[in-house]
Length: 280
Ligand SMILES: [Zn+2]
Image (tube, rainbow, N blue to C red; front, top):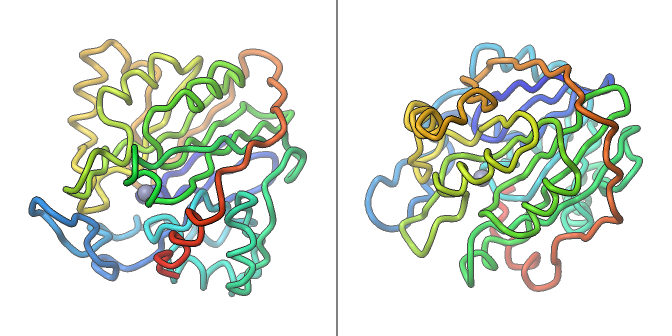
């Protein structure tokens, strides 16, 4: 299995013959509005361009996977790319119908698709009312029989559901967002540094951090995160790739755990509100 973080959450995942483009935000720098609402520091996003290797990576894509419909995970150029290339877009049962309405070949992630054991693990994109307003997010466990298993956590704060998924599924690799996003309004909407440390301690295998240094409301730096993980004695099994860097994983510790039937993220009014602000 290979994981190539392109920028923010946009990642090319090579697994079992698939080249799955996760959460494509393909906009030029500054093409999206700032996400920081209060407290200063609002700047147009993304802050940095895609790496030079992105074009070659995108050309390989055989499918798209969207964890949720926020513009830093699926923007207009990302949608146009999927549509132009005729790529199937895999998403949770709450997001897939909305993506189909946009003219995409969107299908629901469930156990057995793509030749893999699959479980959707609901994530929570913040706490309280703010977390609710941020809408549903799908974490995704993917286990191909010939590859290490992977848990893509998606945008989340630390919850019992996330910790339970780690304990139960024992993923060989975890991919988690580390930007500690905060809009200057309410609490953090992504794992805080303390929560990232707790997540890394809980991880049975390696953990890869993305969602870094690309957006105005994500203050964590790679250097700052590495320093904290080093101080906690966790650097050895954590990876903080540069944009475009490709990581290779070969180790499978044990037979893959079986997923349980998918507990889909909540839909209803929460999804309806988010869809109005999806930006695509
Ligand atoms: Zn995000």
